[in-house]
Image: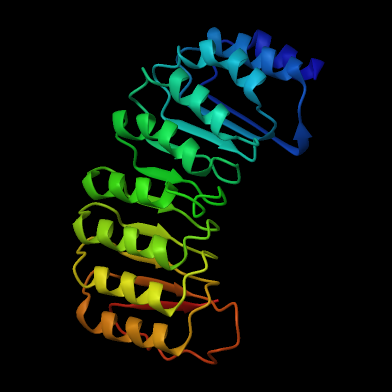
Length: 268
């Protein structure tokens, strides 16, 4: 890590920092190096850390430096083992930053408690993209909290909630939000344990929603009934241009949803 330390120490004009590793890094030294760098680079606009373990001790080291990034537009903390207590510290560190446009926190352990802390960041920034895939949000109130945020939000364009076990109960909350939201254009719900009943909820909401253009429900356990709900939806919805469908089980064979001039249907 001495090489990284040297790079960070002598660079004074960097606007984007992306540190991605092939195996998890847990050294305190790298965290201190990052903190020192960030304190001297208040104009940084993009920070991406992937596969670097950030526990409570490390986020405390980074917090004071993060507070100074007043021009930060993109923050990516992917596979950093973010638990609720780390999410709380992150939210406190960023509570005076209002420039974020893209926030990707995929493949962590945020959970419903962590989402409550992060909601502070969501509300004070005009976010256009949020990625919370694979974060154990479907086991508590996480999806409900996000759905309530989505109902009133007027800036978000892309939301990824894949691999969160949203299931039927979560689909109800999201459907209510989609009926009221007027800006979201892309929604990703891959591998979320959404069955026919959940697809019915979503399809009913999309008969009302006039802005969503792309929805991905691949690798969910719905069958013929779910396909029929989508068939009816595509007859009345004039906004949706891309519907991605993939099947986890063998309940359904083939593709009953026909492609039209205004609907691009993908079965993968």
